[in-house]
Image 1 (cartoon, one colour):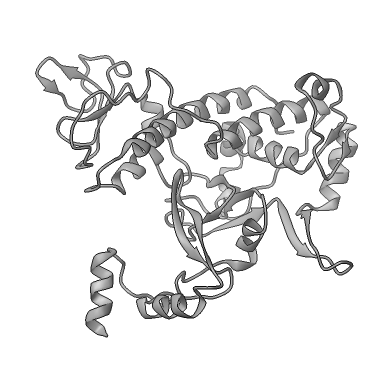
Image 2 (cartoon, one colour; image 1 turned 60 degrees about the horizontal axis):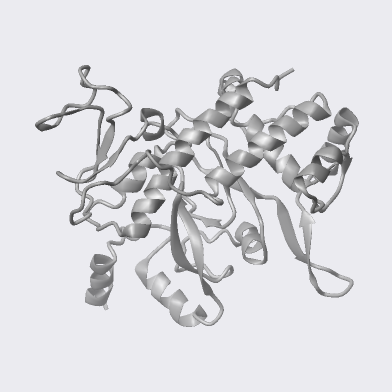
Length: 348
């Protein structure tokens, strides 16, 4: 049995057993609950989507399954805001979004919480599963009072023109987008930096309907970006021009390229953005990668770097290459949206 366990550990590159997880527990869970669970998508790290076996009940294959929260993502469509009472790596405020399961240790050095937008609960009346917003009524009432708008549990399906003319009601997703925009305000993060290190964020109410809708629009852009909704690689950014074995060796960001090949990071004699390249091995690279995307932080991670480092020794396929190109686009555009949010007066 010991040999079998070690073979499994070696084959799947598994970590050492810990207090909350052991290979034997995982094997036992799979045998006993294989008919009760299903293969589900999980966001292992920002923009790093994988698959796992999830029952929503048993603890074994996943050490800390978080079933009280994640069952609401398996029951139907949902969004969840991710916050922490601590900074990732003690430097960067943790704020992200998910519409699927996420891995419990998704941010380094900072335990976090997931707040689902909707709760799926069995009705006492007809025993059917109902979808209800996971919002505090007091907050809804206060937004109504300050904005002059009215709350609706469901967002009306209108054309873009109709929606512009009838912005008299707001829905749960609008509140989520408003919050997401506020929490991506550089001014807000700096002003409340010390508080954010010790507690969950406090979001100011909108002063009026105009500010509310402006932030909802920008928060919606961020939400779609971070969930990679309808995102495609951008031509002329993170191009992948050289054929090869596609194996990730040692990812490096090089800002200049001379006629003889690669140069040192930070070379002053070459343009810092136009020729910036992310090399995955000695010959292959993603071209024209903006430095702001390469260095961008989400919580304690720099996704453009982390995604490649986690694939060292692996061969990228066509979908992998496109996915990385999408990540670069999203990180660059996130910075641009944050600059737009900065123009709006948020704090009182």
